[in-house]
Length: 91
Image 1 (cartoon, rainbow, N blue to C red):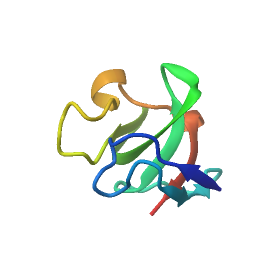
Image 2 (cartoon, rainbow, N blue to C red):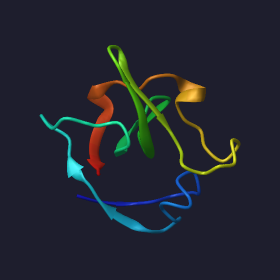
Image 3 (tube, rainbow, N blue to C red):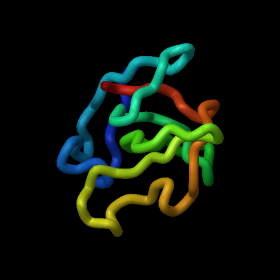
Image 4 (cartoon, rainbow, N blue to C red):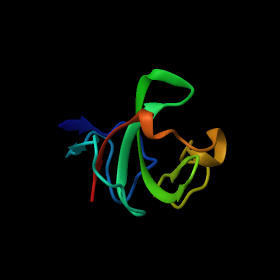
């Protein structure tokens, strides 16, 4: 599955406009450090791309790679994401 990066939250790993290929998420085991593509928990019509930082019993903590803390809206803002919201991942 191909996904186009929109924005700078994953810079310098991923650049705005770059296309990445992700593995569809079904029964695959996610690992901390994976790049995760998921539906935005605040607006399910939007897709987000973030780094999986922590796996918790109640969901996944994700954040952008950009070192500027104001460059990414992530689990610091909206909390854990649910496994049901995950579309795919990249190792």
